[in-house]
Amino acid sequence: MKRIATIVSILFIGVLFVTDGISQNTKTEAKVTYKTEQNILYRDTSSPGWDAYMEERCQMDMYYPSNSPGFATVVWFHGGGLRGGERYIPEELMNQGIAVVAPNYRMHPKVNAPVYIEDAAAAVAWVFENIQRFGGSAEKIFVSGHSAGGYLASMVGLDKQWLAVHDINANRIAGLLPFSGQAVTHSTVRLEQGIPDGQPHIDKYAPLVHVRADAPPMVLITGDRNLELPARYEENAYMLAMMKDAGHEHTTLYEMPGFTHGTMRIPGYQIMLEQIRKIAGQ
Image (cartoon, rainbow, N blue to C red):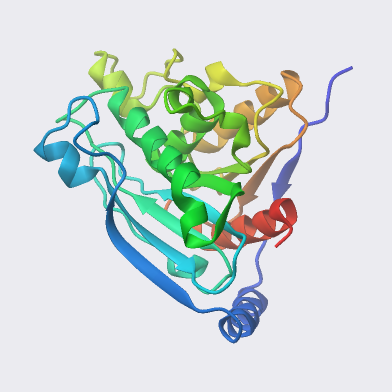
C-alpha cells in the first residue's frame, strides 16, 4: 500500500505570530535563566589531522538554561554553501527553555568532502557526550541548520557512519529539522567532483541515498516553492516521498508561502519550537 506524503503549507498572520512569540518568551523568561559558553573546542590535539585551521574552525558556542535540568538541545549549523558563513545563536530560539549549540566547521576550498560532514558529526557527538554536564538531556538532542547547515544535519542524521566513528548511534537523535537543505549531493561537493553548477547529481554525499525507515523523526522546512532557490522545495518534496516509500512514518514537509530561501527561517523557528515541544514533551 502506498503511503500518503505529508505536506503542509502554512500562511502566517504577522500580528498573531509576533504576539504569540512575545507571550511565550515573557512566560519562559520569568522562570528560567540562561548562560552562554563560547569558543568551545569540539575537536582537540588528539583529533586526526589536527592543525591551526581545525583549531580555528572546530569551535562552537552554547546557550543553555542554567536552572532547568533535563532541557532539550538544538545543534544549529549555519549556512553559506559550505564555502562561507559563521556560527550564530538564532535570537528566535533564545528564552524558549532549550539549549542551542552553534558550531563552526571547516569549509571549501581549504578542505573538501567529507570533511564538512566529519566536523558536523564531531560537533553532534560532543553534545551527546557533554550536554548532561550542563544539565541537559542526551535523549533530547535535535539537529538542524539552514541551507548548507540543513544539508549537514540531514547527512549526519541519515548516514549513520559519521556518528558511528564516535560510537554514537544516529538513531539517538531526537529529531532532524533541516531548513531548506539540499537533498541531492550538495552543489559545492559537485563542484569538487568537476560537475557543472546546476547539474543535479546523487551519490553517497546525497541525503537521498540514505533514506531509511528507522531514522529519527524528520521535519523538512522550505520557503515558497516559487521564491526558493531553484528546485530546493522539489528536492525536499522528493526526500519526503522517498522517506515515506522507505517506510519512515514520521517525516513532514512544511512550505512557507511568501517566504524566500533566506527569510523562511523566521516562521521556520516557530515550527522547530513546536516540534521540539511535541517530540521532547517540553
